[in-house]
Structure formats: C-alpha cells, structure tokens
Image 1 (tube, helix red, strand yellow):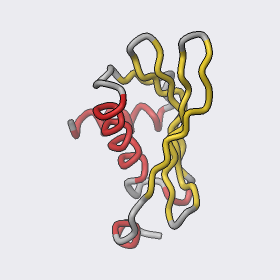
Image 2 (cartoon, one colour):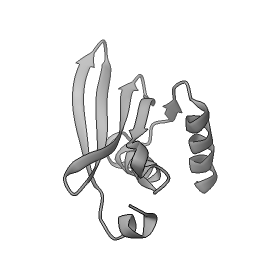
Image 3 (cartoon, helix red, strand yellow):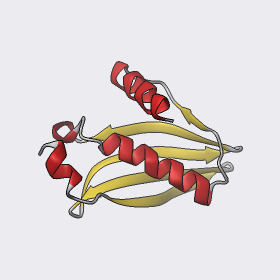
Image 4 (cartoon, one colour):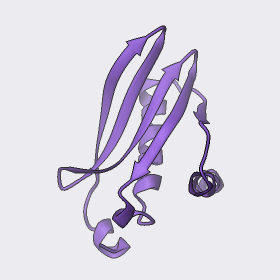
Amino acid sequence: MNWYKLAQVKLEFENIHEDYRYEQNDYQLLAKLEGSPVGGIDYSEYKGVLAIQYMLVKPELRRQGIGTALMEELKRLNETEFENKPIKWGILTDEGYAFNKSVENKE
C-alpha cells in the first residue's frame, strides 16, 4: 500500500485505558485501518506527565504517515483529556530517535 492509497482511507483511533496502579494510568492508543490494528502507542499518565513507553507500526505500512497520525492523535487527546501535560519519550531506538526528531520539527 502506498501513501496515495493510504491517504484515501481514514484511520480510526481507539484509546484504551488498560490499568491503574500506584497513581499511574496505562493506556494503549491504536490506529486501525478498515477495522484492523496497524499501529499503536503504549503510554502512561503519571504525576502530570504523559510518558510514551512503546510505539509500533506494522513493518509493511511504515513510512506512510501512520506514526505521525498516531502522534497527532495523542496530542489531540492530550489537549482534550489530559490538560496539555508534557509528553516524554522513553528510550529510543535509532529509528525512534529519527522519528522523534521528525515529529518535533513539524511543531
């Protein structure tokens, strides 16, 4: 699937509250394409910070805007549900570091 085809299909998002323990809320934000998960972000809300633990997009669908769309949805949720808390990234792989820098440059 190329970017042109993906751009014609609307991604759906589902934010799932997975757990609460020791004042920490754990969530999974899923991106779905035609009802099937194609990527997601695992993150937590703790002491006034949203912390991204893990982000994944299906390998065959990478570099098509799904990761960026997930981050935009997380930012939207942050504005509407979490009162604009700081978003912190966990330990980054080389690919994650490059993605993080590309997302920061778009702000």
